Image 1: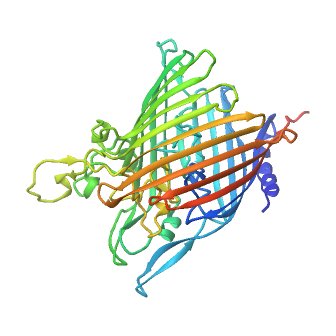
Image 2: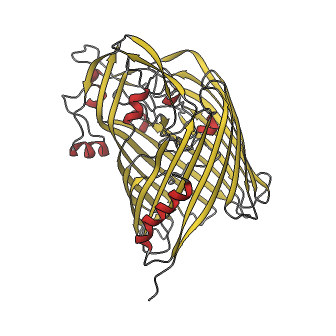
Image 3: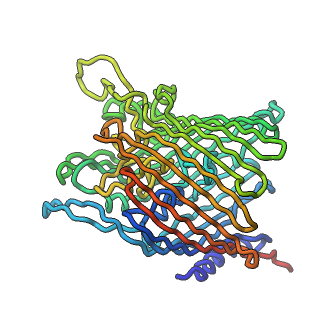
Length: 515
């Protein structure tokens, strides 16, 4: 189906909802081509792009229609849909066949056709309710110059979910606007079972399918109309439920999990201690939990330019919540102007995930009848868990892509192999000419493997990207984008590539019926 036919079909589907309304619905169609060398597209081309541009070469057709939630009216509704088609170069993954006892290389590529987004939402006053697959656009840490939110970023494909919360920050009563609150929570279901089975090696380690998703957050903010404002709060996300299957030399050695119960939705919300019949980490916290302490301090100058200092501190359990993981976190500084120029934005971030509450994890409850006393709750294993595949969707990290995603594991291992890392990312952007803008991003990181599986030698990677965008003045809505990028080092491999895309933004206009 061509892009025009797709847009026509979606427009016809929403006509029934708009017959008594009078508004415009934005739509977008784009064609993207990338080519290069290496097993994957360079880091900056594939990261924070919704899990789309991962392959070293391909052609992509995308089409989207979306009606956002307006803040103007007391009651509003919105919806959106996005679909894509692609032909991409394949990447080989190792696979073991127990019948033949042989290893082989299975070629895997991006889907030929896929649904990226499909959602609907309603809002009443300051509260919203949404359902479906929707690209996350509500993070406080989604700067185009940054590494992305360490809990939920735009790096992976969206997870189908139901989400409810405040549409934006709301004044807390009796504070006269000096303190505001924003919060939301969600439950969802992963749909990547097929991807996991296709990419798993079926020889060792494990695979967990049928997993559920939970997310919540709460932020407090001082008056944003003042020159100086502060935002502070916490995020919490989790995988729960699911069916676990472990393999030993190609044979199933263990299975666990019997579906999800109503009680599990409550237990994952409050991190309730597990029952005595559960094993391992489940004796302490049901599910794979991940969260962050978040902080942003913003200062607005007289010319309306802004300087923001921020950090995100990750946690996996109580030791991280109590900040017993040292300097672990993302520490950043960003500057933004309010007018175009050769430099209208700059950001630098330092990332450190090397402490992880210490190198040792010893919990006596994990080992029956042990005579060894004491407890050491270290080796937090950010993004990993003994029962669940890595914190990823369709192979791409749900949090920041700065930690190498499982899709890069060509040996068919489904977890993160390099979460004990340190590095930095810096970027600048500008709009030197009318219609012309650019981004320049660079990153360096080094990894020591994971707390449980240390790397025998330090692995490192340097990544650089230059992006240019041009909006054609004589054809409103027509844009062109080009990205040139490379990776060098032992962590991500040596990849280089060029991406060129053309997109068009238009409007579908509905007029109120007149009688």
